[in-house]
Amino acid sequence: MSNNFPKRMFRFFTKAVSILFNCLIVIVLLEVFFIAVYYLHDGMYVSAEDKLSEVKPRYIHKLSSCTSTRSLASHPYLGYSWLAKPYCKSFDKQAGHNGLKFPLEKNSDVFTVLVTGASVPRQLLEKVEPSLGEALSNRYHFQGKKIHVLSGTIDGWKQPQQLTMLLLYADVIDAVVTIEGYNEFTFGRHHSFEYQFNAPVFPIYKKANPGLMSHRQISLMWGVNTLFEKVEDNGILRRSKAVFFLLDIIRRYAKKELKVAEEMTGMENIDALFRFPEGWDQLKRMEHYMQSYLQHVRYMHAIAQDSDLKFSYFLQPIPIHGKPLSAEEKQRFSKGSRYRKNYLVMADHLMALQNEGIEMNSLLDVFADYPGTAYKDRIHLLETSEAPGIMIDRIVDELANEWQLEPIEPMGKE
Image (tube, rainbow, N blue to C red; front, side, top):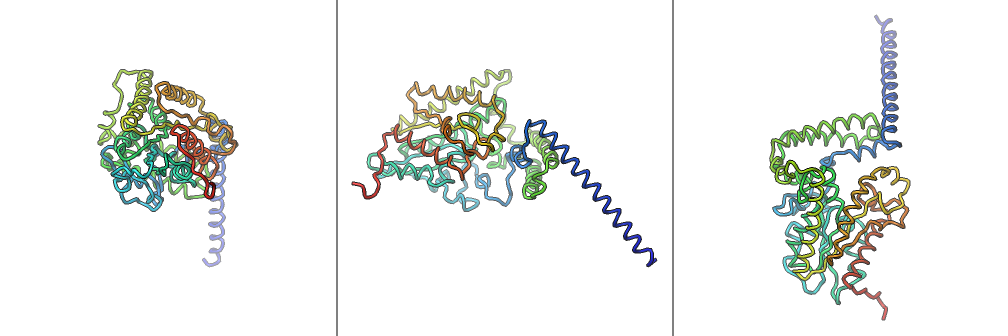
């Protein structure tokens, strides 16, 4: 037996190598196949990592990471707000919504400005230097008063959360700036305008209100979350088109199952509260949605006027309009002509409010002279680029002109 043992081991080893080699060939052929399939589908080469980030479900985030949604809590009027004790240190500097950091009384010694909106204005206020608040307070004052900026921003917010913020804090501020448009439009378009304008962004609302979800939903979300996290952390798997294909199938299945599970939870009532009546066609729903948006802006302006506050609205820019795209942006944002057309229709309706004496500002052309990469995704700015500073400068200049702010003289100048 000892004489045959080396031969058996050799045969076993060669067979194992042969099997592994054949498996490797199959894997390579599958990868080449899916690269070709997605190239034909997309009309260009898009990396698996980029495709993964585009289709990743909104409830997916690293369990160990410091993300905004892990620092959210239910709020009786705003839908959700920041936790009083943030989940991680990067949210310690949040300016409020938890009742601890927002003022309860107006400070007559400073000119207090509330900036409200979702994740893009939060970038400008909290993720870049100098921030929007620093730029405004360091360059200008109002009638001798130092400008103090409050961050009333949370990822995923949309109207009427900005309107509600103004209602809650109108008596302790001197001015309000709302920077918005993208979430308001995208929410309606994503759901084919089946829901009324004042509906919350459901995925984030559910995360901040877990009591609305069933155990089945939570388990499914945790499982898919973990799978995506493992793939994203693996340098080989996250670059594979074949792996992306499998993940996309799982994502579609999870989406379908979550929808079924949703019908058996508290979200069924939320859905019924905000869904348009049966029998309304899409055109009627879109018209009602747009008119509701205009009314919300009018309400904010009316509250500001009644409370003797300064008010200014800024419409967010989008990558596929008003900017010379960089090579990287062309690869990511080559499609979307219909989206662009509809967004511009909304912009026209909003800017027409200027005829009613409302301070409306469009940032659609803010990057018209910037050929570099300004966006890291379909709406968020690349924080390491010049883009945030360009937008901040534009906003500050507009506010200085509208509110007649006075420039701060440089030190030593007489």
